[in-house]
Length: 133
Image 1: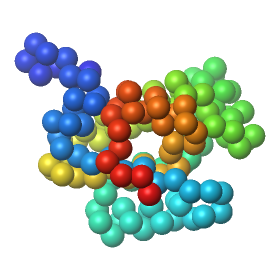
Image 2: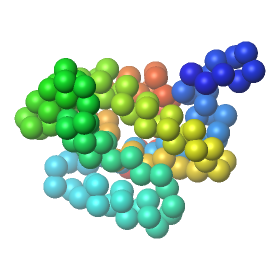
Image 3: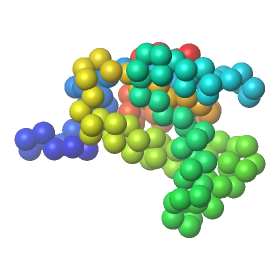
């Protein structure tokens, strides 16, 4: 978390305090979810986190054990382990919050969650998204 005076703020508390909206866009393979999310983000000036693109980049640029796990999942077309996915998504959201976004800003996360376990983990670790598309 982040220190506010002597109080450490959790990610859900930081999201709530900043009044940003978290929107998740998911769709079946071939539904052009990424393309739609990218266009929507550009049109509405949303922060866009492409979960599949982030995981693919991590499969090349992370520590050896994490890289191997992510690379195996990405290459096999499987969901990455929930703890690994949540950790890296939390880092991306925290990095955005560290830029001091305007009140009411929106983060659009495309391609996430990939399964129910990831959705439940996200809800408990970052809070429930405002909207699912």
